[in-house]
Length: 117
Length: 116
Image 1: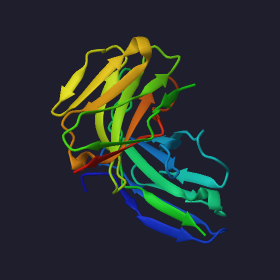
Image 2: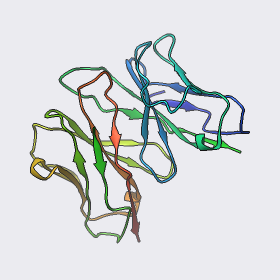
Image 3: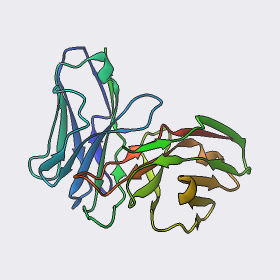
């Protein structure tokens, strides 16, 4: 498709279960970002990939969160042993290139709304 | 550290009124980028504008205009003759080229409701 695609759109899990969220970026976009958006708040950065390399994971809240992008396109965000505080919308964004002197806008998907019961 | 403040949590206007959404930012970098995004109820963040720190010219795009004032660290967004379809949450965001990532630092958003 033309835009960033995320699946599933909604995910409900019981506390303690593992979940996997998928992001399919815009074709050719080398940069991929994951953000977490709590209700009523702005998105907060989780992690960043340039192609298959995870260059920054400083925003991941705990070691239960893990992200990968093995072939430099599709990315998966995995949350192990989910907790209620993990309930949020998880947004994926991609941008066309990383440059020192410019900053390409990030294009966002619709997000995955995760609810932990 | 970077910070974006959107002091207006919610704004309601009647259709055709003008409305200004405020954004104040903090950064120690001399080069940075500012963005506005719109988030309709569907949830997708829609890119509206990007401005770099060296370009203080105001910009107009149809009913939208942006006022960037470096002296006050503000990047305000005005919608002229608002329409019901403008109802959404609007986020201001900041990005700095320093560091390994180009992550956006978002404000907490302003919920705009345009009443018919």
